[in-house]
Length: 451
Image 1 (cartoon, rainbow, N blue to C red):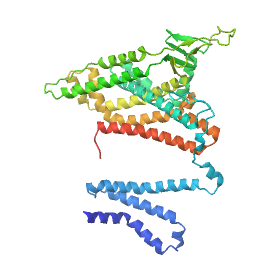
Image 2: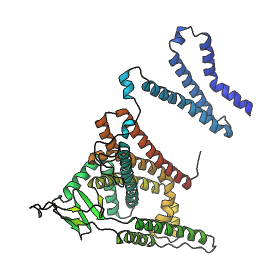
Image 3: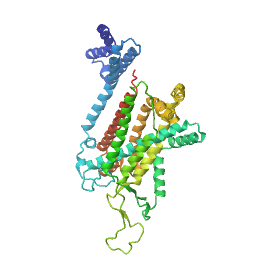
Image 4: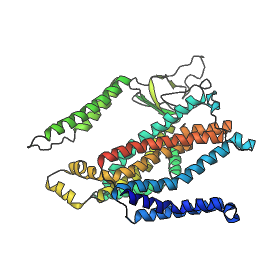
């Protein structure tokens, strides 16, 4: 009823309206004129409380419930947003010259050439010719690389360990529990330091010519593996997408058959992955090891006077490897607990029904257990994937050139703390929102439940 809606609106906003009318006529009263901010804040709090009680009393009809919730949220958020905007404007136009220069948000210094060098891929900025924006983009790509690889690896490892914790095999279950309790309670910064330390101790020194069948050369300065060609990578991706699309098409048509009976081939995807690995590395360029002495030095045979021809092999830096190992081990322990808790939240009858259908353990897990557990797993995995993106800022511990490391060095060189910190804040916010948007879209496809 529109009349009832108008009455409800008057009830909610009446304290605020009354206060405005009173302040207009008795503004000369010192109690109001000297404490205007405090009184307006008090009225806003009362208005929010009355609006909340009105909503929680469930006296609204369903058609207006969402509108009243939105109005309440807007009323709460409006003072915060206005304060943030006015505070920023005050800092940008501060009467103090030092403060105003400190909050100068012009990024004109980013078009100057950079003063340090970083290791990046596939965009390698040249020092000292390229501008700082190119170094910034290369650092973002470095952070995205370790984030994506760590997300894939920690998901696979976490699912395996989470399922293993529920295994009937006591030894496997205990080992999985020990892994979770150790890495989940270990600070990530300490773990990254230990991983980097072990890699430095385990990999041979640069003076050693270590290789595996002349296909991979490694030392504490880097690991060189065969460099796959781009066309083979694209062909492998198309092969995976083709097999996945064919399976979906076949299942969709088969379910239309009244005599449809599910059949599964667990060896299909392992064979496809093996074939893809063979295609990728079959025509790859192997690392070309050289030991040249263009200056005719007398110490030609000294160990360590070797190098890999640029472009002949793909380099994996120890810093990148340390970040992948540390982030994967740490996050996989949390993912394992998410998987275990989500599986245990399922009704026991689902497992018993799959057993009665004669499904194997692998089929029960892939067709019955994990698809239903996804509903409770995805929101938690969303948080963990965003944590991987934010935890990548600890790459400074292993001297990996991520976005935080590059911005940190720029701040030390230039002294532009506030503009660079805001740039860093926006970068991490955009990355987190992108991950959250993808996961929320997938979550909406899995479940349609809303309040």
